[in-house]
Length: 261
Image: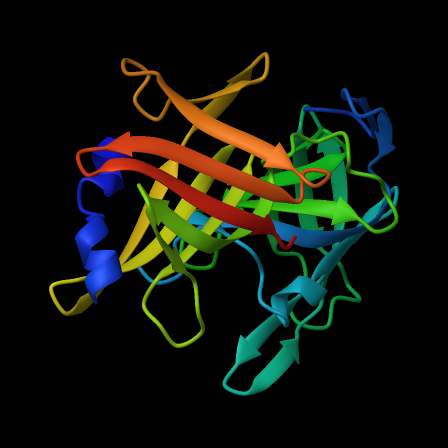
């Protein structure tokens, strides 16, 4: 991780300026049928590279309602200041981890009879969808059911906001309207670090993607499988608080995060 971001994060700059209908999956058996709400997304929203994100307040209303023979995609998206609802309904079959879907006759916003396929799996009680989006980009959507307990998932998964950055004996608090900002969106499939920091009078905005694995109680960056790197991560306050420490050319650095999702 340090090779990708922390060499640029200078302390002085900061302080001077396939499954069936039911899957047995470690978190218990989870029925495919029901309403699944959008939780995490991996895509390329602006042409600058794919990363993990959380849906905005409009998109998080999106859900997939699945019954034995029909999928209803209740899709919400932002258009200007409006939140548009564009439902699409499909007849489907599920075979070997693939939904084969045909636009249903009662679908209000799609060409009737149109066909598409989506790969899916249930893992840790989450429904994971993989498909080509409308821009023909590979996309992953992670969906969760309401009122389902997901506390069995790794504590790193979720959305974390940085509250404080400490380098040696100096510390900087994250404040609204200032450049210093950090966010981690993590899922078992990967993680993205968003980090803004001041340097030479500029506000540098960085986005870095990682693949990670947990072995025992330790976390490792395996983005480059030939250079497995230990992450110094510690949790407290019932896994709602996290510190991420690393040694850099400018000394020991600790980032403090609070879980918000």
